[in-house]
Length: 399
Image (cartoon, rainbow, N blue to C red; front, top):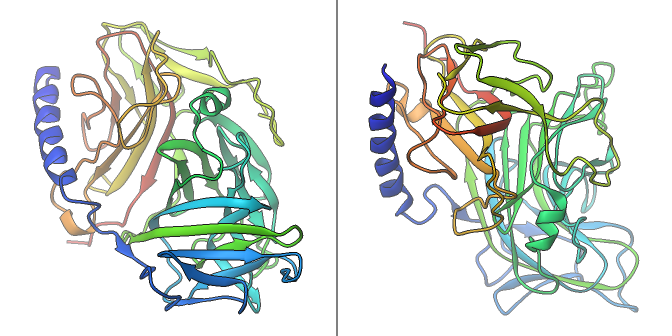
């Protein structure tokens, strides 16, 4: 496939993607009717519906006996996208539980997207009643099979997120959570806040809450302690039918191992910004990115999504060297010039076709499959890439 033909195909795919995006959130279904708590279950006296919103409220005389949750009872999704709007009006913090397990009446353990009126903290990833604080705002973390936490990249410059700002106190904000296999990403108001590859499995205790979870309930939190009022609305769920496999990074963050550079214009360079972010977990090594000086041949990855016809999702971030824009009208907003791209190849519904979903990007630059077994990162200009992740889908049926 020539470079010219790749660009022509990209233009065609972008046109198809724009037509598809014209439909309002295809695949999403509301899981809150806006009138009552049908389908939801929580401690009586603490949860209600007011003005079309779910309200969680405690007072000095009506306190929660510890952290308590309103649980959605109509499913325990595995792979999904969840969107909702929230606001904290007074008091303590809250959170969105997902892939969680009920351990007592209205008490759960599992992943939690943090909600609090505090920039730099709201949007981080917590593990309720499990491993505790996981991924700080702005970080890309990988947890190994034994539970060791490691910051392997930056999904967004924390200071730039706060300056945007990515959250507004006491106003409506929107969460977007995406789970595919062992890969999780959270967004607030369109800004990426955390990304996680979770490989932690407790072989000695398969039921231990202190490990990853690949499915479970969705729930909303009232925090124990100080009185608080939190509202939720517009809760939409898109269940993903694909049975995703183990996500993996395609760039090791150290060198060009696994990649072929035809003319010596690709290199590994230190990340220029965001490395000094305050965080609970420190990177085990330097944070680097792939850089092309421009005008060279594509970098070809030898990390192959086997078999050649496998379905997969490819995610990465890229920026033109010198770009520093934060915000915009794209579904996922760039931060410090870094744009988030997501490309889906195949899928259960279109096993014989190429389907592409570009979350953010521009038409004349980008990624395309050079070959079913290779990943290419073409560039006409000086550009950087980071957080390159492959999430394999279902194996095609045997012929």
